[in-house]
Length: 333
Length: 180
Image: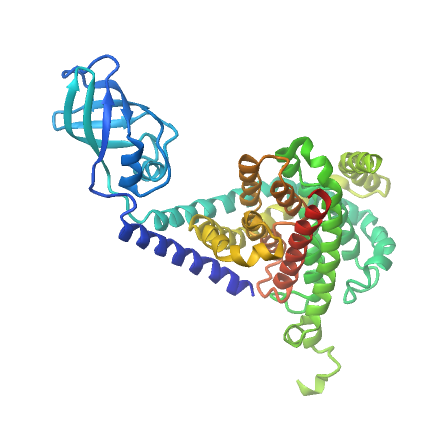
């Protein structure tokens, strides 16, 4: 299943990016090679010898909409700068101004670092000292989406490592504390207490196994919204379950159950991130969140149990396909 | 409700300090060499973190590409006519699809919806309940299974996704019933 979802994400992304880029090319969304007519206002008057001079750019809304075949409307004027070279003139929009699509995309692609939209000025004709008409030619924009997905792939690969390395400290702290608890016998005590509750959900785990204690700690941490404690505890619980697993590359039913219970997110306290986003508006949502999260926990448990009984998943159950399966006596092997 | 909330919040504030202090204290009482035990356990932390890197890279770069490709808008448009008769606002679809994939991405969806519709809107409430009541399924899957090098996940993905879908639908209907 993960194979298909993974491959699906990559193929989907590629297809959508390619299709929208081809559509942009055939529609000529960015009008590559066609100059956009503008009016320039020189607040200090035009000075032919000045290399840089301030300018206000006016784009006629009707012309803009017809030119780019879009619904978006430009502002009445944009601050900018006229730069004169020996070879020609360049118009630069002020940094970070709010410009409508598709100009925003053109800026993002052609000037990612400076974030000022730049174009070559053509046909500069003066109406008066401080007013001129002209046309701006922007650099051609092609394959925006394909470039975007490549950039995203690289960026997220880096993020993955940052995330993992950021976990080192937390993992070390929790796994260290747990080792003390194990050596002191605390984990075994906790396992004995919580076993009656968890045993029906994890029938393959032997009585008094320390995994029960770690699963309890993991689920408790989750419930109280202690995300950074829940993950190390869950990992440790997985490691305990892995010790019982005769086939180390395949998940056992117990592991799937633990994972399902974690992804269903048993939470009594909403995630910190959500509280930060919503502020006090979160208050009236706490009850619905608790209700939904409890219900989805039940669904997760039932789903994990029932799916585990499907023939396809039964066949791959590491606990059944090894020699303690009554249907496959050892003599067969 | 209010006292329950205070109780839970106090508890979650106190659990961490209590755990961090009580483990070494109890160990000392049981004459465990606490410092040595801690360091020995902590050493594993590094191994685990390094072990999950390949799994995280594999899943995150694919998710990153999906987000950047514009497939989201396409899916929303495609499903719009199917969703409206079911009383599912199409605006919350990006949340439902992105939530199992990326935590930060779906948080951005909530922020975006707040900007567009305001904090008191039904759509934002639905999206927030969706966010609060589900987990980043694929991240949890990759981290937990990656830590023990499991690649054949069997029914873990379907079970997680079924729970997610159930939570999304319940969030939609419960919020509409409570607030609309």
